[in-house]
Length: 290
Image (cartoon, rainbow, N blue to C red; front, side):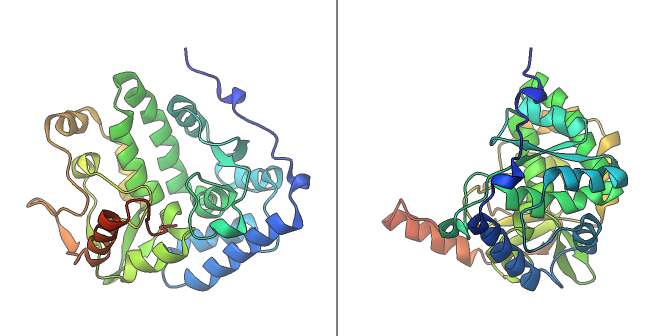
């Protein structure tokens, strides 16, 4: 028997945030406000406006949920940190988005290992006001139950990583951001759409399930969708054949291009070679990714 999501929901205690903590939110918000125009997708900006996210204060989850629920039926719930996979999927399936209630310190502006309120709310929640993306995330949660039962959570996690967290989409001859891990990151917001270092390849579910990724630095490869409808179509797809492929075929190392890829940008991988060389000489050092 899995834990109930209710066991992990905690009060946000909005009134306990200090002025310094609101100041960190303000710094991060204003920084991304300058960087994201022309780089992030329209749905993100529309969500920020619809939900009334403000630069001057950390959002109150109750207020935020009231606005969001009227639009797509989702709500934001505070959790103490990362929750078990089964709980996470059940929350998404019930249109509850679990958000960390703590905020990073001023020394952690550029990198924090565990998602905080800025990553979770500024990064994720605006797109939950988009009806198509909101349906995709709910469907993902429902599909997570099957992955949990089959012991394939790590494979499904790659799909979440390359779409919800680090997804980009086509815009004319270029690209724009929708992934939360990118829109909440000063460095990656620019790197993912403008740098010549990373690979950018077309969305491919089987390929994605086999692809390794970085959790502590900028991504060597981004998967590119055409629009959110492409994601929502996954709700009608049986994942079993794709799981079978992922289990049968070897994982694809980070930064690798394979023959079947539809490549938009073949990256130089210059940044990643630089990081790997630096790690060989100073193993405890890594560049901040987000």
